[in-house]
Image (tube, rainbow over all chains, first blue to last red; front, side):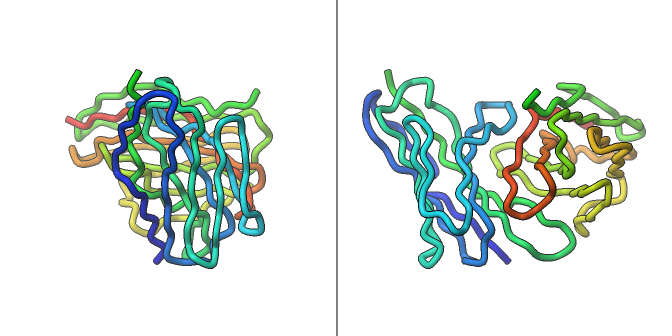
Length: 114
Length: 114
């Protein structure tokens, strides 16, 4: 069974710093990996999608990388801002069983200090 | 229109009630999903519909009954729920149900079972 792990569970940094969030998965037979942002009590906002054939994706200050062979993905946030404070979830898309959905990590709770 | 909408935003129900959650998207997506998210936990897949065909997650109790009247609309019928079913219920959609597709999430329905 696919397991997705995120490190660290929580992170607090001063505004303006660059930071890296880590995600690892046990089954390298993924189709894609998606990074989401979730604000308290809210739904999920899709940030970046990396297909299994890709190495990285960029959107603004965000850059996500994928290394299937090592079972790792990272989300890099440049020049962090207080508005980046949220929980960040990574999710792997796999195939198997009767339903094909996303397997999520437990998330990294990020606080950017003004 | 690039969003998934869910109604109601909040729902409080007793264990003997029957209620329904509604999800709608007008992006022309042909796959829709229900996820359940307990407090401080990652979302867990419940059901997948692809081209109006249901894939069932075998661990979902029968007191949850999904329905897909058409490709834009997804319902989750609730009956005889337990207090432990209290959670945020998230709906998502993707273009075709292919495993490479990006999933887009709605804001969720916060369900409390008394």
